[in-house]
Image 1: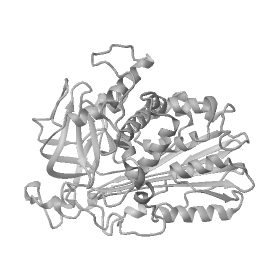
Image 2 (image 1 turned 90 degrees about the vertical axis):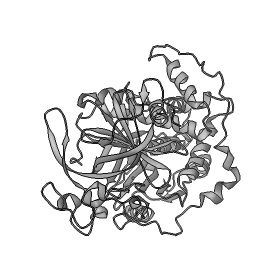
Image 3 (image 1 turned 45 degrees about the vertical axis):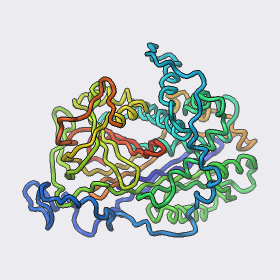
Image 4 (image 1 turned 90 degrees about the horizontal axis):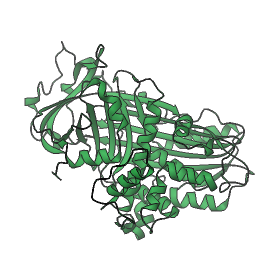
Length: 508
């Protein structure tokens, strides 16, 4: 599986924020015909396994990385050795701090519109969590809120793809230069305010320092997967940028300031070449043009490639019907395998959850409403609390899994969706970014684009049960044949890397 999110934040007079990913179709083209063409309802599979019973017990123990996915054997000057940079402060993120005014163990009945509801639930989730896990809880909840704002305005049969941690990191960089009500809005909407208020040991600096440590924890080598993050900063020549801002963005987000001429065509050529190199050839011509009044540009790239721990035999891929709604179906290539998988059922939200682990400590969670009409209610109640509940309620057993191959390429201008979340100052003349430059700037576009490909190889992007939540003890087959949600989740830091909705696997 390959997942990639590319961000370009451009500050103009007015300012531009851009985030995008280039077409990766060429990268995933296999040397032979696609499995969906080779294996159909009337065709015979290639040499290999003809049914699930033929899969040997040690099949999943083999190396799951093949030529379909890019190799990880690179050692070049672009790699940042975070272990060396941050080794002196490794225990910082693992510390579990006492919560100020902890929530009572009794049930609290408050109207959902009451601002204390979020704080009460958050503090309950914070109990026993490390600092970095707490930050990722608020990052995920912001991602869910942004997802709902997006879902409310697009067609309900559209696929969705977001990279919550990438968006939060980009907002963190912007916050370093925000002041006054602009800073207050960012901190409130992103959930940083609730995080800081949870403990007297936390302040604004804690948030940015944890993003620095999150980079260290996520983007290390030898974890069995590839997860890379790249940050760059370009400043218009003769433009005065506050030295404190440049130092902070380098210290917390590893973004070096480089003086450039945005009007010079060579800037696009050189920047695209650099992006091409940093993304190992995956992104070509990421920047098409730059507004003439651009004064500052921030680049962020988030790349994930993982291989399934329990891989799907290519020979078992076949064509199957996928239900779009009560009346329509579409034929799509689906993968099939058997193995030990964690799964659970949420009877309150009326959905089933399957965990598909990658080699390493990252998983994809597949969430399927039991009713075709149940997606909206499920989306409405998505939260960090839901994911925590699902993980606690999962049990392990041998299952047969049927799961569609899919590829999504989505692009959004997030300005209107962020405004719906009451993040408004950044996008109008009230913007106070005086911590970046004395010149008046604002953001008039926040474009976010991502790509995910899921195939047979993977992705290149306790047993206690709670009340109303029980394991799928009777389900032997887990068939994904209708619209579903997915989440890419790193377990050690509890970081939500990517999330999305697939309503039609055949629709890119």
